Image 1: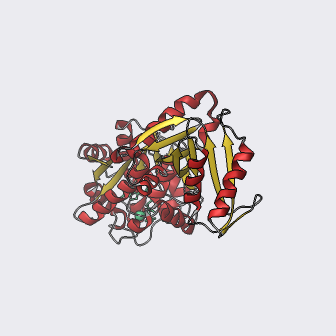
Image 2: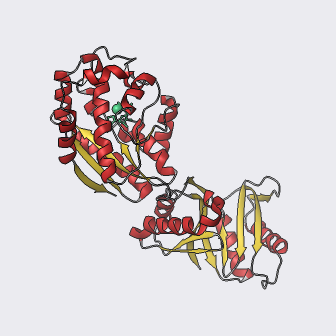
Image 3: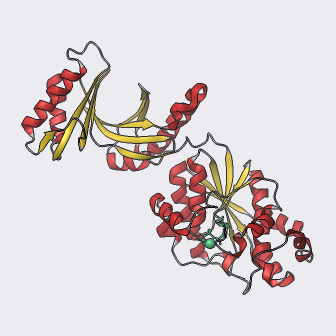
Length: 381
Ligand code: ATP
Ligand code: MG
């Protein structure tokens, strides 16, 4: 007998001719997730299995974060011997009370009982051993799955995984990662669809400090748990911000700052061979996120800009942030470079054709080049 983790996959089922390709990537991603634990991963009969891990809870925690999976179940693998199987079933159902049903499946037709007889026999033995359980075949509270194949697999608990598509099957994008609540959620959304992301963070020392930087690195780490690592590009942004503050109309300061972020991000994205940018903007959230402002921001880049939170309320975004585990870090109170020179009266309906004049005193190209050249990259796991 040994403990294994039974892993079910989700939408990959739909992939037709591409399925073997998706499954290979998915299995590799599960392998990478359990590698630090020394786990052994294999595929059989449309499931993935993990064995040889000491700490099953930690294994569950890691594997359920692999995109493309539907659910996981800690299971027992044992020999195809009825008494042994029954003994494990009884043991597994010991902590439970209420109603249950045994789902027997006999894929090995040489096994001497058919699926129904098998389930009934096991159900009977469990009832004899646990007086707190009764059978309900229509709406059981607990479902015990027992499948006889090359070996016998027994499981009761099913823990939902994060869904989505395998990381690496959806291309590459660059996420503009601030220290706020929104951008980690935006990145998560595209990562969930298989997009490998790097993070780009703008910092403005001495106006933004070490703690703000640490916070962003922590957020990147939390996202990297879903992708098995992430590159973080740290862009020195002070000079751009000071020049914008000095030489541009005050009411357009934030918008022009955002246009610089996009220009710089696009250059870095190209180095990373990304095909798109991602931001955490949501329509109308602040002055720089009105329709007019977003059009002015988009106008400086050729790449598509994905804004997966565009139609979401803050409360909805916060709920996702809590679920994915970034919320607590995001609410730590360190300043972001965006808040450094916030105009008192930002223009909410900027006109695109006024932008060139508003930026005319800046050497846009040189500022962008300098920021890109001095960008540093770190990898987080
Ligand atoms: P919140 O609104 O919760 O502060 P936010 O991350 O959305 O979080 P905004 O100031 O609304 O912050 O910025 C809009 C978007 O611009 C962010 O979602 C992010 O993609 C990008 N952004 C803002 N500041 C930075 C920064 N310092 N580095 C990288 N990207 C940033
Ligand atoms: Mg912010």
